[in-house]
Image (tube, rainbow, N blue to C red; front, side, top):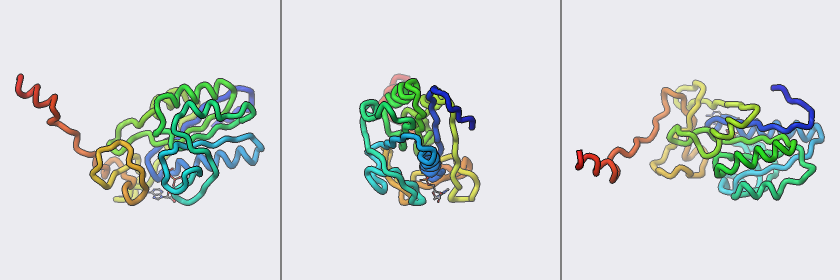
Length: 201
Ligand code: ADP
């Protein structure tokens, strides 16, 4: 990765399935910036009370203090003019406004790092992450370990039957799976619209 030191800002995205080390990688980059005495502000979505409401926490129990926000545009008001690095965890939970917020901060000359799931439990693009990846200068895609065979895993397997896109939890609800062992949920095929088409046809 080429990290340049001029005045320009940029966006880095760290994505992948659950357990792929996104939070660990985010924490590593933040710690290195702090060693370099850069001014850092850390945010995460308030929905994820997995371990601690205001800390960024990895599954391996590394953590850094952060601020929980639910409305992403609030970040623009909370970021100090002097801040050089804005780090955001659980980016998938924010609205599409995350893309505009990240671009505004980068255009102000800040380094912006967003970590988040690129796909949901169905293997579909998750929230603002795909669009953010288009705007980002650097995209790091991480893989976990498949809990069935031990191969590299690109997918997050939900172990419960809920159909909500957001169900917060860790290893009791989700596990990482490779392409061969990922079992996406069955799509609804006979909704009201499908019945109407069948009757008319
Ligand atoms: P993410 O933010 O992507 O969910 P974390 O950074 O929180 O990931 O946690 C990564 C850590 O999770 C790994 O270093 C490892 O200790 C642990 N872990 C548990 N299950 C797995 C798995 N299936 N594959 C890889 N790491 C796993």
